[in-house]
Image (cartoon, rainbow, N blue to C red; front, top):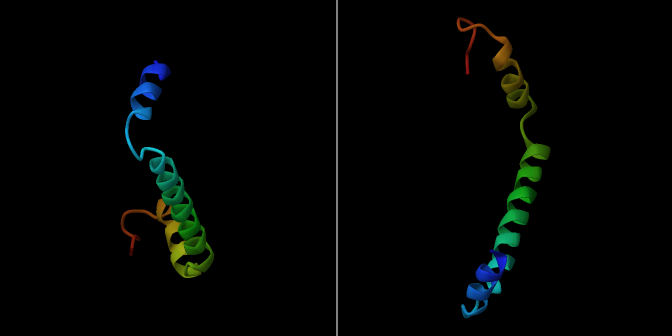
Length: 61
């Protein structure tokens, strides 16, 4: 199965750029996610942690 896919992909001009683009998107996403986690407001995180423990009457977010 992989032989057929590889054969078709080799005939497409400029196909080698797609893995590079997908790797960059993956890397940038996780760098931004890591940055957000480090700089997130601690009160917001604490409020999100407590949501599953609150009853329906107490939810304020």
